[in-house]
Image 1 (cartoon, helix red, strand yellow):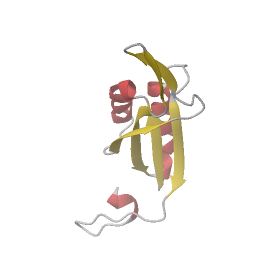
Image 2 (cartoon, rainbow, N blue to C red; image 1 turned 30 degrees about the vertical axis):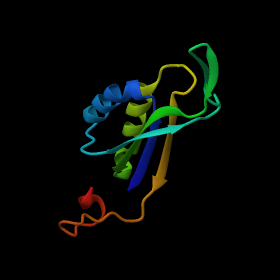
Image 3 (tube, one colour; image 1 turned 90 degrees about the vertical axis):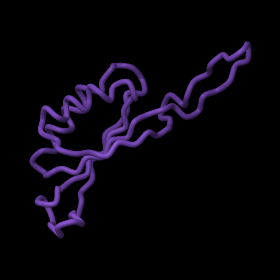
Image 4 (cartoon, rainbow, N blue to C red; image 1 turned 120 degrees about the vertical axis):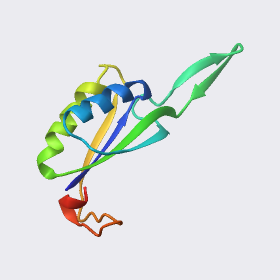
Length: 112
């Protein structure tokens, strides 16, 4: 099992969700987050004053998947979230030692 964590632009969320549904993702956790990468935020103008926006809004997706499905999920997120502009996001893949469904006590892939 592996945990796929993807940070994407908020306006790409619907496309990413559809792409994940097409490859068989049955569940995910979605969180609204803020952050910055290489772009270090940007400056904006408000009522004649310039100010720096350090943290940009992003969406964080967390998907637990069987090892055999990881590549198709990563490909789906990459294609759906890509805009070819700075700030498209990142995908992290981590090994998961164990997963337990609280309600039934199922473990491993059955608990996903």
